[in-house]
Length: 103
Picture (cartoon, helix red, strand yellow):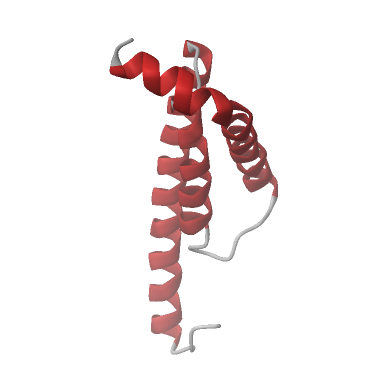
């Protein structure tokens, strides 16, 4: 038995239900992120966290999990970048108006 087979059978097989749950949670959060309204700039942290959950799909066996995971992680990276852009734009707007940053 080589090292990859050992990792797959001894280490990852017992974790598959947990990895599927984490991957499914990432998908649910990604769908939820399409519905809820964010404070400008909050999308960056939300989509970064969601992308981290979706990384579990890269470890699951089968190419559909991996392909879906890569596509959704790319979408999360794009969403995090847009969130950062909106946050910077909002902060500059507040500075121009002389308003304090809400906490």
